[in-house]
Length: 307
Image 1 (cartoon, one colour):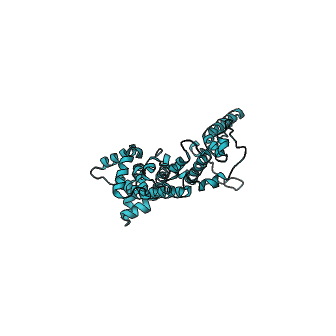
Image 2: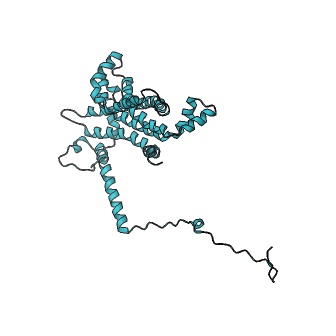
Image 3: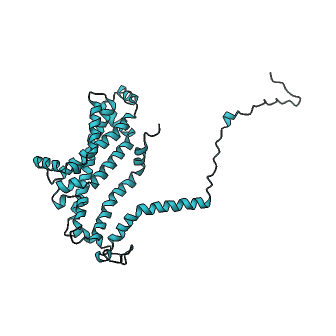
């Protein structure tokens, strides 16, 4: 029973102050950086930015100059007159059909990337989820192929595609690019599949999901950063491939931009304004691709470093 005081009110129960464990309140303090240190950091960042952008700026300024101005004995960084028509006239130059070269580069890179994805996904999933005889040997042979460059095998590839009747075709370059980028894609996606607990697959199989459903509906969303990383590196490697394309593609229209660029470099004269213009055009699609999937790419590169 609670005693009643003379005033007729019931006294309040004494309350204990909460313990320190219940009063854990984080206090954040502002990062007060001195003005001098802040300016020094900004200057250092600006220097790094200029160092990385300077080659591209020189190419851009050179692409809007005339040939005579580029070869002048008193060169300038900035053009005296901006010749934007260089980007229009370079598509109709007699050296090479640039529009066909751009289409060829896009077709080869996209098809090679899709082929790598179609082969690497099931291979990475199977090697990560199942134990079979010769598994380690298979993975070792996969990574060994990454150590060999296409330039080393160009003569053998040339004879092989002659025998197959695929010389000077897009199919030849699609197969070459897919073969030399497949090992990287398999290994990076293998590590992502291996990081997923097997209990996830078992729970889905108990609910009646088949192997294909487990792969497409359960695992793929979890390894999406690894897929994006593999796709980007495969596409960029195929886009920049040069040695095999130079040997296997002899028709000017079938050659990619990396080979078409050399057509403007002659023995006695070089059209540097077109060289710079084509280089800028070749860089733009890759830059746009990185801008679109930058966040997923970074997540794929650092995933697995922290558990």
